[in-house]
Image (cartoon, rainbow, N blue to C red; front, side, top):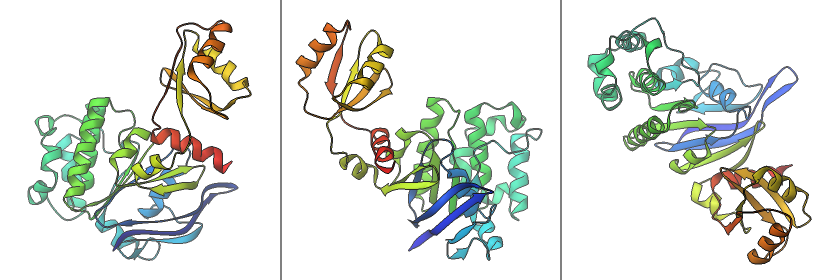
Length: 303
């Protein structure tokens, strides 16, 4: 059974095409990730699925309800956490949660068990204004407000953007617990490392889906040798490798450059060549690809 079905959805803003022929389905109880950089179309897609935008073309349904015809039903069964913090900053933590509970005809007391694991972490600050919370606490409050009416499908649009690493880790631990309780979760993120925490991921770029697969299968599909290289002059090394006839692609990756060669290259010989060109402190080694490497490879194939 599918909780979400998207069929050939497109969205245009005048002459700008934000979404182009998007199709996928999400199973009930699945944690489904939509991974892509800013401008990929993730927010437009989420706004269509939560009935805040009309698609220009195609159709979509959530729990069997059409996003255009059955928008009232969908709004009662989904939780939506937009990318930008949108709660009332001049209301306290508790007042915000009470407000959202009231909108859906329930109370904090009645559904406290739904948000206990999340809300209990910020409950000691329940009298603090929402606008005075830290980034991680704001995200926990927003998730509590999205959960208080017992949604069956949860849409989270870039929930960890701008949040520190510890809060990001805690947030994803909460999502996995929610998923294990049977809630279907769709989460979008620009962070490629979060893809491995999803059951399946859709890689998006410029309004199109490049691939939909389990994270481990995406990585398995990478069929080239990948090297990481660095030296004391990393910028000049980048420019040198970009001009080289034997490099297929090179791009920065943390403190290293990730490089794919057009032909087999012997590490020792290539290191000697770089030394002869004035580079020092060279480190070169074969490395395992990540989701981000696979995304970069898919982008090149689609160009």
